[in-house]
Length: 322
Image 1 (cartoon, rainbow, N blue to C red):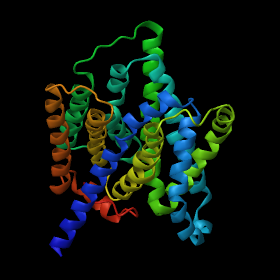
Image 2: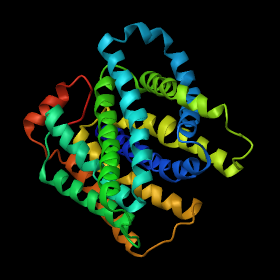
Image 3: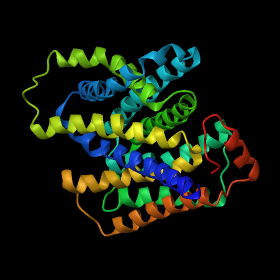
Image 4: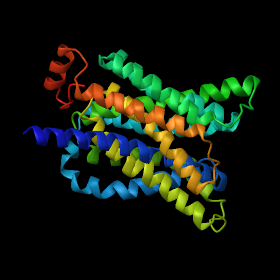
């Protein structure tokens, strides 16, 4: 019995970690795609690939579609429209105004933003281990992303670009928070295809407009591979794995694993984009993995209050007391 519970817990940790690690593949692949395709066409192709890949799940669960409540349909539309479409628009427009350092600094707030949202909107609880883990996660992400670089933006572009990137952080937080709530009632394999098709349809207008005048023979094989990776890695596969783990833990626990995203993005950037390695990156990786270890420790030792633990046991989401 105890062994079975431990295995289940380890599977949840693995889902959270590898889901976020696959999210990290989106950073280098998005950079390649944004350099090769127009602003709306690239994301549209990415979403279309992810939606087609997830459609078999929708076919399997089609008999459960009438079970989806009006509230769930609204939240699915919001997740697709804000969590994916708005996130993409905020991030792409923000990164046009600031360099990668500024964008990375603002994006490093993701773990803290999700933890704060969990406390404010989901009555979550943060023990000292989780607070320390979030602090280490943010520090590690900063070390990983700004070492060896300099901030080149200034003035209005710096302010506006930073605000746009923070809009992407807020959209990503809403994506996970609303996604968790919907997953309390429905399977991720049913919800995610609906979310991606919603986002695909919202991008279809401007995407197809740009496609009409685009020469599809120009992109190289590497750039087409990047489109597939951007669609399949962070969205189709990464999000599916992430939501499977997220529905079983509290958002504050999951927030500690979000630092795996920039760590995996940097590793892939070494291999794919030829980014330069700096020894200080090892310190950043150490902080990231320490933060993940701390939040896992908090989960295992049930650092949160007994009341928090009892409410988790009673929760319809099956969330573990963490």
